[in-house]
Image 1 (cartoon, rainbow, N blue to C red):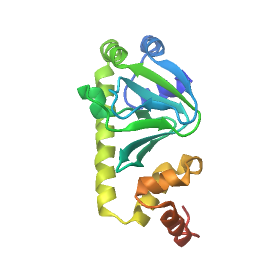
Image 2: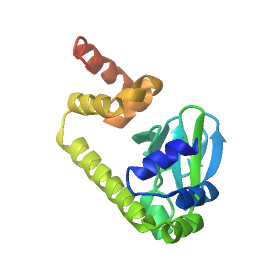
Image 3: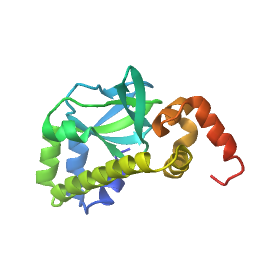
Length: 193
């Protein structure tokens, strides 16, 4: 399990054997059931999560409706960035949508990670930059393209686990009703998605 985490960290920075031991010491393995809330809207985010197995969704209650706006699957890091960095209540909830295994690191241990790994700070900067770019892309995409185009981009970006995400979450994510999503999918039938 830690091998997957180490390989993803190596996508950002170099680590040696001694630093791998530090990583093993600082990250905690958690086995979570379906619909487990890693973070609830209004709580302060105090952990960075690495998804080893499973999928989580970021959602927000808006006008009494649960709106899904981000999914994260295997091999990704996730947290509520604003809440984590500024110690303010989270504006979203992070929930598992299937049984999920995460490796988590507390904010205190993340500071140790930054200090004890040669390139620990660089890792933090690169993960934060990537999260920022994803948020900007999400906002610009949502406000500038049709629901059909949003669905096509969703399929492209989530192809490895699209069959594991309930359709009503996908509909919510692209901003349509489940019925409208069915029409979009029917219209695109035959395309190589």
